[in-house]
Image 1: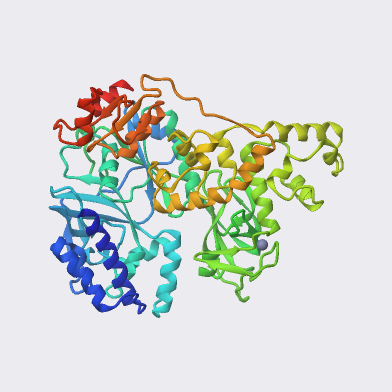
Image 2: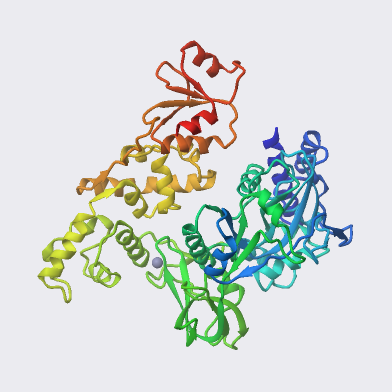
Length: 625
Ligand SMILES: [Zn+2]
C-alpha cells in the first residue's frame, strides 16, 4: 500500500508538470483517475494540493528551534583540536538553500527556508513538486527534517531549457537558481528540477547517535549526502580528500565537509553559542580563484564516447601552480554559458584537483559554436542530455581510451599513452586482447625501444594475466563498474568468473549499492563484455578466486525471515562478508534461521522448529560475527 502511495505521488507530480509545460502524456481523465486513487489511499496526502502558481503569500514562519549557522575551520589541525577524542560523523556539505520540513502524523505539513535563522519563508507549495522528496513517511511523531535544496548538474541544464522555452530568463548558476525558484510566485512546477538532501532529524527522542539519523532518513526515502563515522583521526583526512575529488567530479556542488559529534547526549551537553552549535564544525576549502582568458576550447573523446571540453587558457598562477588548461565540465556547461575563445573567465582550484571553470567575467564578441563532428573519427555527434557523444562504435579516439583505461586499471607498467598511440598507429594493437599477443620483437620495432625495454614491456604485460577478480572486473570498463562496485558484487558471493558470467538482474539488484537503473546498466554493459572476458581467459588469464574469510559462520547456510532492524540486503552482505551463504528457504541442509520473530506462525519458522534447525536473533547473529 505504502509503495503505491509513493508511486502515485511521483506519477501525479510528473504528469501535472508535463501538463504545465504544455506537453501532456496522458488524458485529463487518466490524470483524474490517479488523483482519485491517491485520495482513496491517503486523503491527507500533500501531493493532492499541488498548485502551479501561488495562492498563499511568502509568509514568514517561526522555526521551533533556531536554524543556526556553522562554525568553520580551514585546516586539519584545527579540526582535530576541536574534535578531541570523541567519535565524529562527517557529511558532505551541499552548497544549496537550507530548508526545514515538518512532518506530522506521517505527512509533510510545512516547509520553510532558513531565512534569518529565527523566521523562514513558507515554501510548502514549492517543495511539494520535488519528486524525490517524500510526502509521506513512516514516523508518526511530529518531527522536523533539515537539509539542503539544490539543483544537480543535469537538472540545472534541463531546467534552463525549460525556462527558456517558457520565455523566462536563463538561470545563471546552479546555486542562484534554487533561491530564485523558491522566491517565485508562478511556474511553481519548475521546482521539480530541484532535489532535497536530508541530513538532520529533530524531535525523535529515541535517537542516540548522529549516524542513526542517516539510516532513518534513507529508510524513509530521503536522499542523504555521503555520511561516514570516524572512530579515530586516520579516516578524517581521507574523507576530506574524497570531498575534494567530489568537488571537481561530483554531479552536485559541495563546499566542504560538516563534522558532528556522534553522541547525541554529548551534543546536548555542549549546546549552542548564540550563533552556532558547539558540536558541529564545517571544514571549508581555501579555494583560490583567478581570472584568465580562454585561448581555445578542445574536445576530447572519452572511453564511453562523451566529449569533454577543455579550455587552453592564458597561463595564470593559482594556488602555487601555473595553470594553462581548465576543464569546462561538459557540453551543457559550455552551451549554458556560451563559452568561446576570448572569453574572460573565473577559474578555481581547490587543493590538488584540476582547476575548473566557475563563471564568465566578460564574454567575447565572437560567435558561439560547438563541434558537430567527432575530433577523432569525424562522425556526426549526438546530444545526449548535457553531453555531446560520438556513437561510432569503431571511433579510434574512444577505442584508445578504452584500452588505456584497461592498461591503467589492470596495472601494466611503463606502457604510456604515447606508446599506445604508436602501437595503434602501426596496427599492432586494435583491441585489449591484442596487448597479450605482442611479442618482444614487436616492441623492438617501436621508436626508441631497445631490447631491455622491449623485454620489460613484454613481461609487464604478461604478468598482469595473473590477477584477482575485482581488479579484473574493474579494468573492463563496465558502465558503473568502478572498483568499489565490483568489490561489492564479488563480496556478495559472485566470487568466480563463472558466477559473474551468469549474473542475473535480480541477483545484482539485491546487492547493496545497486538500484534498478544501475543494475540494468551494469548488467547490459557486462553482457557486452562477455566476448572480451572469454577471449582474455583463452589468452591465459588466471583469475584468482577471492579468499573466503574464516569465521564461525564460514560456509554456513543461513536463511532470513521477517523484519530486521536493517535492510535485508545489509544483513545479507554481513553474512557473505563473513564467509556465510544466504539461502532462500529452510531445508535440512540449512544451518541457521535468522529472525527476530518469536511467534512461530511463519512457514520458515515452523519448518526450522520441525527440522530442529537453530534459530538465532539478529542480536545473536551480530555477537557471533
Ligand atoms: Zn569518434
